[in-house]
Image 1: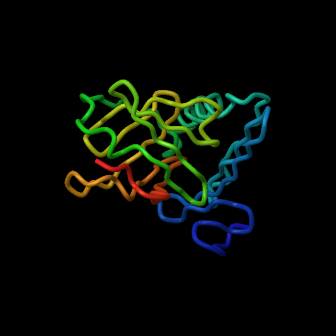
Image 2 (image 1 turned 60 degrees about the vertical axis):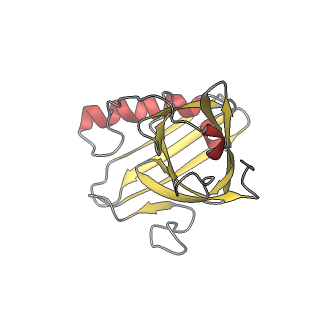
Image 3 (image 1 turned 120 degrees about the vertical axis):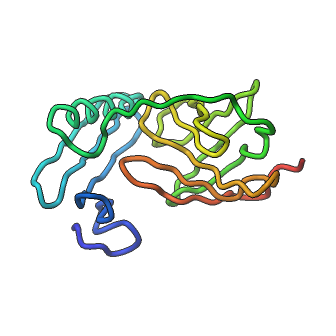
Length: 177
């Protein structure tokens, strides 16, 4: 199940053999529950967390950060991040993207950016700028990096979640300036 078959996946498991330790995992999400399995392939350390609520993803992340702190895991460590002012022209970031086959919707509203995606939970989350390209979420240890090419609308993104970067592309036509 942990032998790479297609992209970053084995037979049902997400794989990451590029980090300091090889890891595998699988998340589950449906109406009314969220679940996560995360483990180190060689070390025999891991966790399985199951919640019975649509907002369970945030709880799962908090529990994984506590486990990482307690047991010295290199993944899921709490990181301090510094916010900067929102960049100009937020409309160039807004749009629909696909990351690993999952839809991700970014909107610009009242001078801020927001993201909506099923794995993040049922509500939209504010994207807090770390730089002109990189944004984080308060509720989840995830970042969204927009690949900028001058003032043109963004066509590529990178979503960093569960210890690895996942490339993404804009779906459909970019907004007209």
